[in-house]
Length: 301
Image 1 (tube, rainbow, N blue to C red):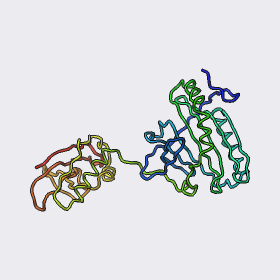
Image 2: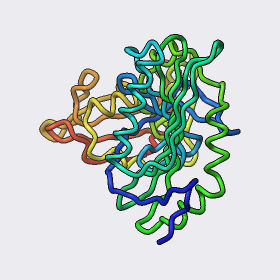
Image 3: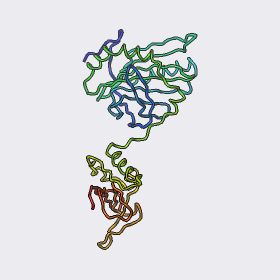
Image 4: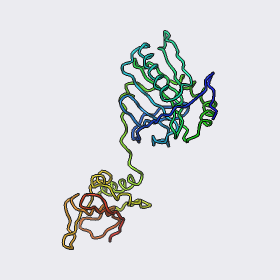
């Protein structure tokens, strides 16, 4: 395996397992870096992660921007300490490719750059970290690129040779950082429901909010077998309270107050008061422990 030599250095890889939490988003902050939009996906403490569209699952991303705020860093001396700490962290988990520092000037605080290769048996990752003072606080701006596979040294070497200098230049010139006060307010967005759940919920909402008789049906009908195994609370969270709940006693169907029966019905139609008829219904059956055992579409008349 031959690695790309970056100004006098040969890359070797030590192994590290790097994990990130998964998340999705609703209202999100977006960074534009190197002609690509990176949307906020996850935050914990002072660390915030952004990935491009199509890379929402943080277990399989290819490109990532990470912003790390250091509230205790207020001047160049503090920033140097943090830069050395980051450098040591990368040395323990991979190989340093290149470092650089820009001294403080009358108009601009000092900056530091660290480029490293990190890895795992399943991938290699190139990390470009720029450390600066912004809005009187220290912040690390990290661009990372991953290649997945167990033998991808040559591919990473080729990527670094072709793209590395351009990424470094773009990172050092990047001026798209949002206000640090806004960054510090970021929180991991709540998980977004799958499209099939959103479809069912939207049609139910349309029927329930209508003041006139209405039928609203998803097309095609989602595979509601996915509901099996969900708890009553999870179903209510997804679709709201059922329109009808029933149970069977002594061979007779008995209607019960909302959420108390073991058989739930969601109506995708609204009739005139006292009118007879029916339409599309979602029938969900629960066991005595409150877990869904069956879910099916049916039509009534």
